[in-house]
Length: 284
Image (cartoon, rainbow, N blue to C red; front, side, top):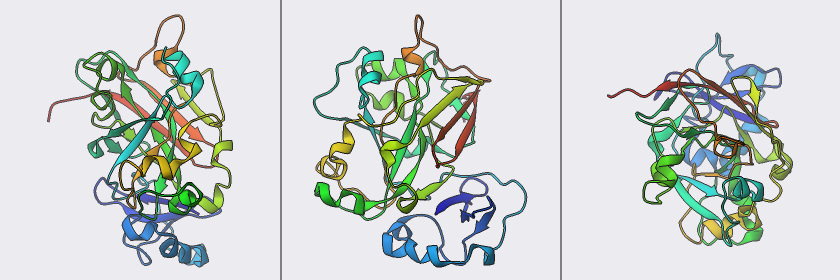
């Protein structure tokens, strides 16, 4: 099942995408794609709903973040060996964790702001893991029971802020608009093997040279057990599971970074497509 939210920022309504690509409103069945509606027993009844009986959404509405209330985004850094290599970093002995501010969350086609004074804003296409059932100290064999589904996350990163200003990754990860999420939350029944999905990203129509399966990232060795040993996972939390190689920082012979007026296009097999325009941030 492909769940989404549509409408103006802060006023999004829940919906699903039917087999013909038509957006169908779910407001009669759930108030939002958030909280308790992400639990397995809560969203499973939606599978039995005849999509043709749901109101079709007319026009071309904005698509919002596919999860309505996100308590936290936990990013995993340097989890692809080739990405660690292009970043001139060793493969960590344990996954690197960081958080992205919830104020960075935007829809999959919303503008991305280049921060004032930034010269090293970068792209990162990542598989997002949406938590359904809350938990902590989750045993590895139960980890998948806590996942509601998957989505695309563009983990926008300002590399100078991240790496050159005191070593605090959060400085370069949580700027406004730095977490486009969606378009769809695809439930686990439609993603039987998340490690087999292809991740793609292009900037101004130019594809990133590397395209990889996420088979060697470290966090999936024990996703629930590892992250939930440091913090409780709540319904709607998102684990952004790391980028394959091909980021701007790693371009040879010279890194390439984003500037206002460019277009990023991202997709992951079966999870939809994002497309964002970069704009200069303004005060306000």
